Structures are given as C-alpha cells and as structure tokens.
Length: 138
Length: 138
DNA sequence: TCAATAAATGCACTTCCGTTGCACTACTAT
DNA sequence: ATAGTAGTGCAACGGAAGTGCATTTATTGA
Image (cartoon, rainbow over all chains, first blue to last red; front, side):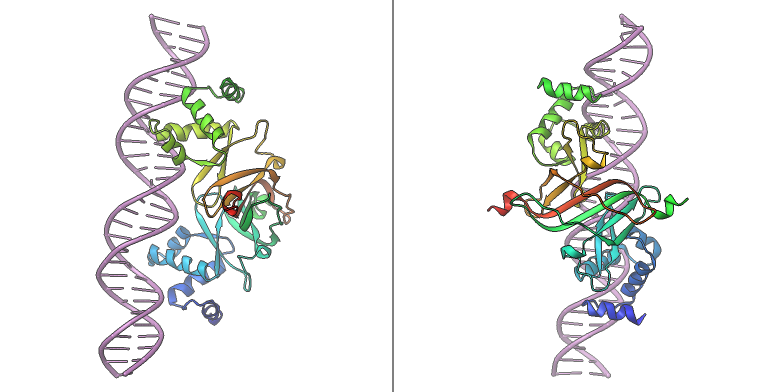
C-alpha cells in the first residue's frame, strides 16, 4: 500500500485516498479500463473526479491512454520506469473481439516504421484485434 | 463520372446521385474524412443519409474506417482492388498533430507481429502521430 | 495554532458524435 | 400499373467527453 503512495509521490501526484483506490483498482485489473468501468467500481465517487484523476495520471506518466477502436478511451498503468513517450517503450495492445477486453502486450514493441520524407512521427498506436488467449482456449 | 458509377455497381451498391457525390467528394479529398466533414460539404443532405451511405460503402469494401485516436471515426476510399480485411492490405495511417488531418499511407504496410501463444489476430490498426509533410515543410 | 492559500472533489450542465425508429419518396421488377 | 424494395429525411435518444463553479480538504507560513 505504501508502495502506491510512493509511486504517486515519485511522479508528482499527491496520494489522496481516491487516487490510491483508483491506482489499486487498475493494478488489480490486468486489462485496460474505461472511465465507465471505474465509475461502476466506485459508485460513490463522482465521474468528474475519476475523469480528472485519469488525466492527471496520464500527464504524470502513471497511466497511458489506449485507443482500441471502440471509441472509448481506455487506460492502463505504465510499467514502472517506462517512458511512454519514447519510441522504444511503445508497446502494442490487443483487443479481443469476443470478450471485448483490451490488454497491454508490453513485451511486444511496435516496430520502427520508415515514413516518407517530410513525415515526423512523435507517437504511435498499434492495436491488434482478434481472439485473446482466454477466449481462444475455450 | 461513369467510372464512379461503375465502381459502385461493381461493389454491389446502387449508384444514386447522393452516393456518387459522396464518392466524388472523398476521391477529391486526399485525406480521411469524418461524417461531419461530409455533412458540412453537403449542407442539403441529411446526416443520417450520409451516415448510412458510409456504412454501406464500408460493408461493400468501398471505404475503410479509420480510428486515428481523435474519437471521431474517419473514412477513406479503399484502393481499387484492395482487400481491407486481408493482412497484406492493412496499411498504416498518419495523423498530424498540427493540422489535425489524417491520411492513408497505403504504401506502408503494417509489419507482421508475432503474438504470444493463444492470441489470434484478425485485424490491425496502426496510427502514427506527428507532423505531416505539409506542416513540417513550413 | 490558525488563517490564507492552493489543491482536490462534487454537482450540474453542455456539446458532440453515433445510432435508431419511423414515415415518406424513388426506384425496380413483374 | 402496381406491389415491393431500397434510399432518404426527420426527430429523437444515449453515451462519452469536457467545462464552470461551488465546496471541501489539504498545505503552508506567519
């Protein structure tokens, strides 16, 4: 528990009760979560608080936002020490068309792409869609 | 003009006046367009018609939908003969953080990715974000 | 310690996009 | 010509993102 507080502090985020709970929730889930998911999990908390907490976490490099093609923003905790902005830390995400869950495949990095002249890449988002491990095994 | 009619017919879409206009509009733009863009371009047409036209086009393989991370669906014409579902035809998209435009880089295919055991990929979406040719040259 | 200040949270509301149901019109085929 | 199908237009709904402001909670400095 103290670890979470430390992690937040280290990233310049004041460890309030709410923030610790949200962090804990995301750490327990192994999949990317949407704002609505958190909202349902914490019925008492206000949507705006959760929304702004995620924004803060994102700015401070605690979570990264994932766009899995569902038009709903998902978020997942960054690996400790990861630097999401750097190309080498850009991993891909997998969206299961069956269970509708999205997970980080942190081991699978996005390959470097050669762009035509004049294009400068700053960020990349790669989402594979299909059937996940859990669903294909059944 | 007759070419467009033929293209639509070939893909099993009846070439109505509206559809031809929309196709023409998309052919002239070289960037991916959102529903709202088309709506603004054809003030007289109803949003629903445009929406359903795009859906039809998509089903019939005339356009493909792009999720560039802006939370707004964009659409672009498929290359003639392209088969969007097939892995080999999956190209990447580039979203410019400056002019906010999204374009297809049809020459740049998405590299094949080796997934962990149990994962089956059916589709892929790769969007690079940064500065486009037009904006970087200025 | 206590007031002054800043940060975090909660509430209400708006906007925008995607989507659907239903009625009406235009086209097609017999 | 008429029945049936496909296309279009109107109205409305729902979900998610985002914002402004009031209130509470935490921090700081005298």
